[in-house]
Image (cartoon, rainbow, N blue to C red; front, side):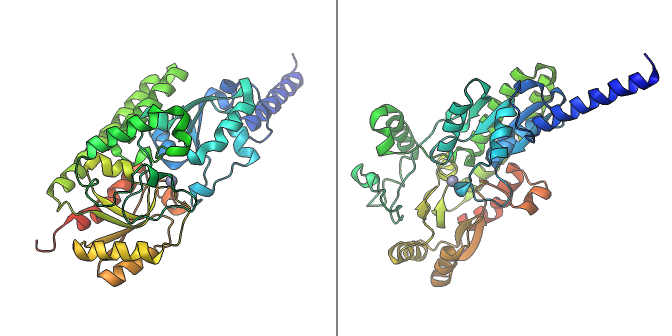
Length: 364
Ligand SMILES: [Zn+2]
């Protein structure tokens, strides 16, 4: 073979390699074998920040993890682009939450048929509870099923005692009568908001990565175990704050996507809307109820969640003399947070100061 011929063959190989790489990046929309793209590195695609972060922590430098939701984008209004769909099809493992906001996923995976990637669904990996409507909360228009079930805690006492019992009860219900499940209650999808669940999810994701890419199994396991250690330390720290705290309820002048967080630590709460409500305007009745709660129980802090304008929390604070704080529920991050390398653990840690302030008594 002459040098010239060698160069020609080399160039042809390089062109082919680049074409294959482009397909792997979702550029050319080529189906192909899931495992062969991007130099054989394990390709993971995650819909939202929590599963992106858990996979990224386990991956370290050994696998590629991509998040579909753009930083700063509202999770509840996300629509997949054609490029997103191609990257789902070309990946080895697709992570999504499951539930109300992920209904689009099922259709897409069905259309892919045999080309669909392996999946891991967060809400199938941990125990779920129903979305809960509690006293004072404003329901979404047209959602009145909870009243019939008597889930609205009219007297405000159900919520205070027997948290564990309540969770079990809800769990049974949500898995009991499958035929009526859809119209009766939706599982709350914000499973990641409990750091214990986050640890379990990290473990499950890492296990799948190990099975798909045995060559890097030890790396994934070691990385995942280190992160699980951080998550368990975070969990213990929150437990300590709650134990030393006043036991006063948390007040959210906002949606409440933190049901699993509250269940984990036995925290009471009141909020303007349930977890994934599309409502942004609270009624005068809802706001008056929350103001009254803050006054009655002398609650020092009112929270709003990330990506919210905070208007409801601010007006409650102004009327009742409380401090307004943000609580990050880790749905998604801003571009700045992404660039700064924020993780689920760092975002949750940033919530602790607010949590301490909310549970502190004024006399100390
Ligand atoms: Zn949500």
